[in-house]
Amino acid sequence: MSSTVVSVELPRNPYSVVIEPGGLGNLAQHLQTCGQKAGSRVLLVSNPAIFKRYGQQVVEGLAQAGYDTATCLLPPGERYKTLASVQKIYDAALSHHLERSSLIVALGGGVIGDMAGFAAATWLRGIAVVQVPTSLLAMVDASIGGKTGVNHPQGKNLIGAFHQPRLVLIDPDVLSTLPPREFRAGMAEVIKYGIIWDIDLFAQLEASPRLDSVRALTPELLYTILEHSARAKAEVVAKDEKESNLRAILNYGHTVGHAIESLTHYRHYNHGEAVGLGMMAAGSIAAHLGLWDRSDADRQNALIARSGLPTTLLDSVEAQAVLSSLQSDKKVQDGRVRFVLPRTIGTVIVTDQVPGQSVLEAVQQLQA
Image (cartoon, rainbow, N blue to C red; front, side):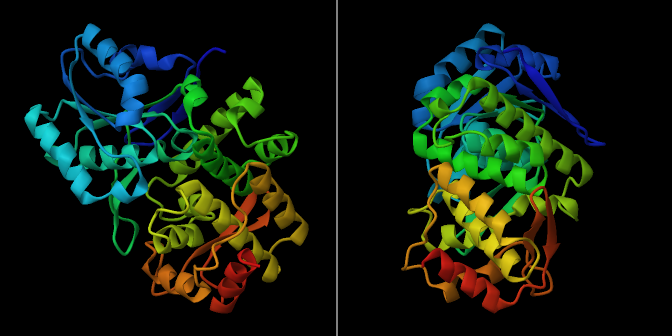
């Protein structure tokens, strides 16, 4: 398939999301296209497993094009998304003498992208970052939109900054080596776009008998997933870059999902699994409040199950603890938790009028 370019039309820092099979080998060419001159210093941030598969190819391609490249490898996993890890990026940036004209390249999943982006946002008060996502979740969500940051012990992504990338380069070919569990985690975000924005994407997902592995999808459906998800994220971000209004809908499933991640110490559920459970909880709350039909909730939950995502919550996660954890969520305003709740497939609302009892019952239903 030929490459596709999705534009993120921001007034100040517009950029492109390039979806290109085999694109990893063309990174240097894309850097020059977006204005990063050959000869400039580049810091490649990745984790050991990803670097072992793809890092040398990227480093050699950059070197051949004249870029002065160094690397910084960080441990994989959400529990390492901390200021201590970002400090290691700073140390590497200092050692490699990164300047304001230099570049950080994030090669990895959402954790690497978030940390590399945050380091770029704060090193010398801001240098360029290019996102090269290697997981489905990062391709369809985390790499696009400029949200960067790390976790605080009391909550997810409480420390961060908006810092738009210079470029996002998505190479679908790397998904062939993605562990099945990580692929399924990305499908949670894809289903999210179908619920909040893109009814056609939702219909195409429903038409596929299996969604639980990259091999179960036709190449056409995989490309559709990447393109539709990127366009949905780009359109929302272009309308509301810093989440003053519309962009909040991208948090569908994340309110309860973040609480589940935090309460299980980022060890039992990965991000996509927690978001899937969070979407089921949000759907249940919306049905209980009469906002959407239970049949639509069932359709959503069927896709989550067909993607191989967990549909039950550990009994050890207390519903009251989830409710309490929500008060630490960064989306709280004036002490009230804001929820994204569906009205129909393809449309949602943001509301702070959700009774605590509705939350408790939704969490308890996940454990039934």
